[in-house]
Image 1 (cartoon, helix red, strand yellow):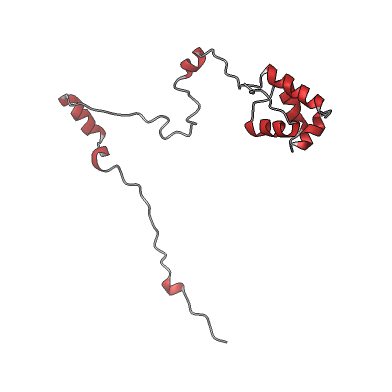
Image 2 (spheres, one colour):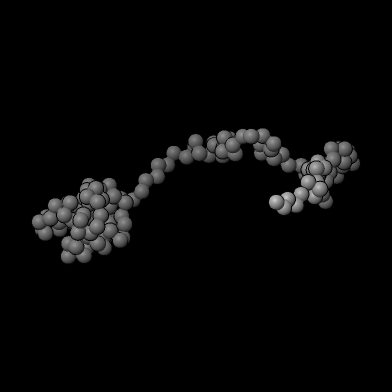
Length: 143
């Protein structure tokens, strides 16, 4: 039986040492060079990296938290108008359709129709066009 060729003589068992090199170019300033520049009166620009070398989240400290606290505005999505929801209910009742029947006619869930008629829905042009076609009416602007 023939033997396989040996690879033991081709392996390199010397250790490989990886080391990180320091910064190059303008960034290669040691502490003594920075102090010497300060003593001579030259302009020295040093930056402290935020959470440098630490395992902290960048979102733990919000730099503009005061601005966020002072902001008292409440933001809300626009919902359908009162006129729209009444027109939708009247058009659906004129066709003698239930919310479930209208929902299946436009391939949406019944909860979508319920939200539009309750005035809680965020207007969606595609859904409003489907409602217009299936009910055969032109509903007023949603908002």
